[in-house]
Length: 272
Ligand SMILES: [Zn+2]
Image (cartoon, rainbow, N blue to C red; front, side, top):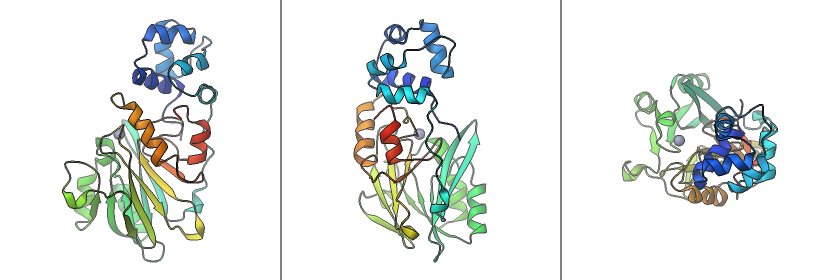
């Protein structure tokens, strides 16, 4: 899976988040305004681009931005370390990731976001004879929860977890509280920014001491982050405090693009 955001996307987000005028950004990049727009859209352009000068002005880490421009991608994750974790990618115009986790012994299971369609969630549940008990929502943006009606119809007793202000009190997450999924435990960390109701779920207790898994929604992507033009400082602060503070080998499962790790993002994400 290729990166959710190429270097043009990263710089466009940072330009809008910092309110940097386009003419100033273009001058720093050594491009005309038209060229800068093309580069922001395509991620590549014939002309040489001064990525580091632009990144510096946009509050990005210049060296990391240059690496993304040079084609960095997170090392492929060996998912066999987490036997009871599945990534489900659905597409309707664009792709979104959902995740299924379960306890291999008890078959108790949880779903993280529904994505566009529930078919693959149903299939994985059947193939593995799962007892699906929980639906954890990272944020209520349409792509992440489009199939919520189908999921709730299929599992009428499913317990919903979200931080959406519209959700009934009993469905609201309590940060720090552990929710058991068989022998696994899930804890919620509030990561508002891209979405006001953004939550990161940390799943621990894997067999064979496999590292923790953080389902982050759109708080952070491999090499980028979900857009937040209103409260970008808050978004970055929450990612630092609640996600990048986790152990380096923690698996990051974003709502879009490839999986990554905390160490990988600390070393390569231009926003941090
Ligand atoms: Zn979103």
